[in-house]
Length: 350
Ligand SMILES: Cc1ncc(COP(=O)(O)O)c(C=O)c1O
Image (tube, rainbow, N blue to C red; front, side, top):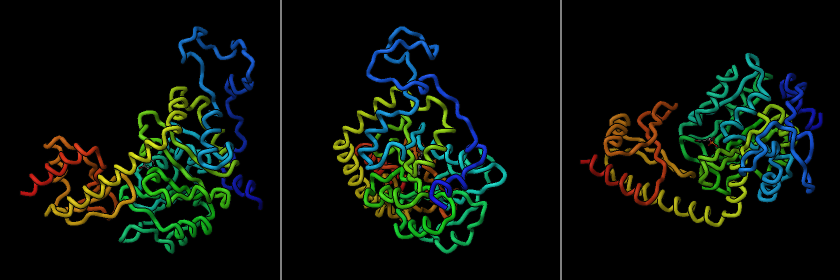
C-alpha cells in the first residue's frame, strides 16, 4: 500500500467522504488585481479587520514552510495546539470504535480530547524514571489503536525521551504517531520535524504559546504528510485563524533572534532555580528538565502548594498525575518572580 492509501485506511470514512464547507473567499483565489468583494456578507467599510481572514493562511504557511524546511501542503494551523490535537482526533478516530494510546504521566488535553470525541484511551505508563516503555507500547497495538500521543519534552515531567525510542515507535506502530513538541525550543536538538519526509505516520505538533511567547494569540501547528494535512483541512472551521494572529505570527517569525535570547535566559534561570531548590530541606527531588518548567517532589505538596498561594505564588499541583505523588510543577518566571519564589520557599523551610 502506498503512503496515501495507508493514511486513508486510518482515516474515518465519513471524513474521507466529507464535502467541506466552501468559504466564500476560498472559491476564488485573490490575485494581484484589485477586486470588488461582494461575496461574503461583510461590512464593506474598511477598518483593517472588516474582511474575513485567508481560510488557508497561505502567506503565513509560505513563511513557515521556509522556516521549517517543509512544503506548504505539509502544514496545518489551528487555534492553539489543543485545537490541532482535537482536529486530529476528529479526522482519524471513530467515536466508540477507535482507540488512542496515552503515556501517563502526560499532557491532560489528550484525554480530554478523547473524551469529547467518544474515543477510548489505552494507557501505557512511562517507566519509573519517566521514559518510554517501548515493549509495553508494542504490546497494546491492535486494529483499533489509531493514534498515540508522545509529548517530547514531556509535560508534566519536563524530560525528553530518547530519540531512538521515538523512532522505534514510529516504525512499529500501525497508526499515527503524534510527537507534541510544545517545548522543543528549549531542547532544539530533540526535534523530529526533519523525519516528516521519512515517515508518513508521523505528525509533529508545535506551538507559539511557549518559548515563542504568544500564548494569548493561539497558534498551533501540525507538520505531516500532505494527505494527513488534507484530511485535517476538511474538518477545520472555515476561517479558523484570525487576521491579527496571522499578522502577528509573521512578525514573530522575523524576531527569532530575540526568542533565542529569551530561551537562553529562561534556561539559565531554570538552572539557578533548580540549584536553589536543592538547598530547601522539604524538597526531596528535583527532576531533570528539557523544558521551561520542572517537577519537584516534596514532603507534602498540598501543604506547600497552599503555603505558596499564601505568598501570592501560583504553581501547578501535579500530584494527581500517575507516579507524581507529592509533586509540584514549577514554571520558570522572570528573575524577579523566581527570586520571590526562592524567598517564599526559604521562609517556608523554617
Ligand atoms: C505538551 C503540551 N502540548 C500542547 C499544549 C497546548 O498548547 P497550546 O497553547 O498551543 O494550545 C500544552 C500546554 O500546556 C502542552 O503542555
